[in-house]
Image 1 (tube, rainbow, N blue to C red):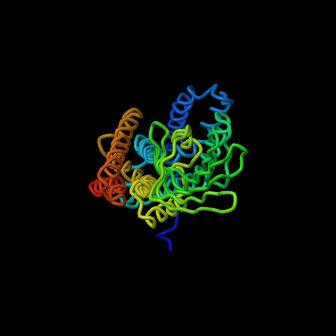
Image 2 (cartoon, rainbow, N blue to C red):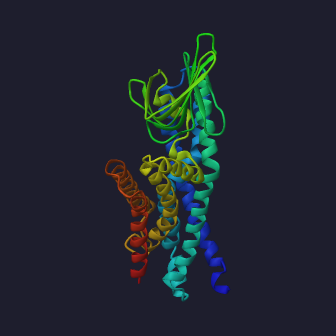
Image 3 (tube, rainbow, N blue to C red):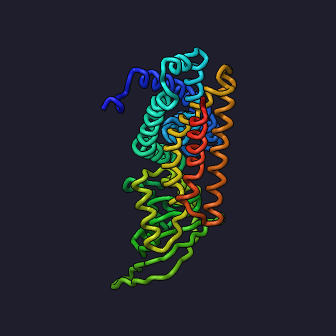
Length: 360
């Protein structure tokens, strides 16, 4: 039982690492929020969208950035926290008192597990509803004739055409679209539904497969076709603001989307990659902390803060570049989403534990 107890040493390492991670996360969120606010400048003044709305939009999107930036925050923060202990010779004192490298690493791993728990909290509980509220507020401010029904649906009207979609599956692909056609007297002419809808730059929508019920004076005609094209001023960019993107859906919801796509014989590679990539990225926070640990016993032991930040930033950028490269491979070549999503995290784990094993 004593072997799994959190000791004073574990708590000391935990606080040192979390303090460093908190400082780095605050800096990265400030930078990320500033860039996001600058992106809103073109939208300020459109409709009722004001500077205050843009600031609120940025604040509501910060929880999303917390878990997206978690691996690099964990890596740089752990380097700073452990580096401070190394410069004060505290880690050497721990080793001189008889503690092994792996015993000290156990305390470091507790901090990694705490960061993983925080990452899942933000990605599953805090970020999805906050991001959705941000999109809704922005849509209401910028556009008219928009209403929301349910937790994931967005409604929009273009003349006698009313469109509602349940979720966004990609940049220009949506799921669960319903089309309501109205007569000039606002009576209902037809109702149609498609499992997926793809939009092109001209505003033309391709709906697949399409089921429609058309209302005459005394009867209802039902028909099902493989696809249908409709022209509308409502484009993918507009609906993308109102609908939840895969990266902003809770994992449970994303899993249901994947099951729905696969059940209907549709491509779920991108959504599956998004799900596994999210899980792998959050778990990567643990291995990022473990990767930082052996560096404080190497050539960077007596280095200054700048060296720690540069090292962590370089490793973090390498991690993100690899993630983006593998994401492109999944989209272009249809590679295995599960395998490719976990490659960066697996490499980080292998390198980290290999370096720990080589510490003397």
